[in-house]
Amino acid sequence: YAVEPLRDGRSFSSRRVTALQDGRAIFTMSSSFHELEPGFDHSDPEPLDVPPPQECPSFIETIEERYGDAAIWHEWDALDVRYVGDGTPGGGMPDDPTRRARMRVWVKTTAALPDEISIHQAILAYLSDLTLLSVATLPHGVAFMSNQLQIASIDHVMW
Image (cartoon, rainbow, N blue to C red):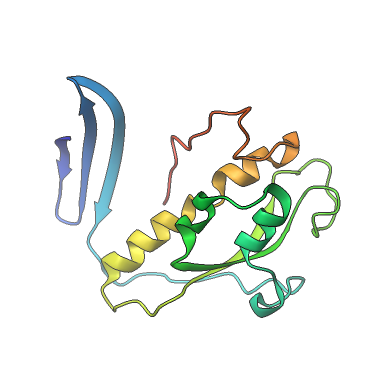
C-alpha cells in the first residue's frame, strides 16, 4: 500500500491510499479524518411502520430460503441482521414502482463492543456495505450471488 498524505490541518487530514500488485495500482481510496470535537448530534426517529427486530427473520434465514445454503452467508455471523423487507413485489414494503431498490434491515453486533470509538467506526463502515450488493440487484430479479454476475462494491462513500 502506498499512502500519500494530502492534507494535515489542525483538525482535518486526508490521505490517498493506493494498493499495488506487481507494481500496478489495483485499488485507490481517498480518506478524510477529523478530530473528535463537540457539535450537533441527531438521529431520525425509529420508523413507525417497521416491525421490531425480534419479530423479523434473520437475514441468513431469508437468503437461504431464497437462494439456498452457502458458506458466504456466515461471513456475517458476528452480526445479528434481521430482514424487514424489500421493495420488490411481495417484499413486504409498500409498493413504489419508481423505487424498487429498497431494503430494510435491523442490525446489531452479537456481542457488546468496547467503548473505543475506532471499533464502532470500523463496524459501521463494514455494516454500510453489508446489503449494498443485494439491494442493487433487487430490480433485476437476479440473486446477488448469481453465477450470471460478477459483483463488487466500488466507489463506496460514507460521510
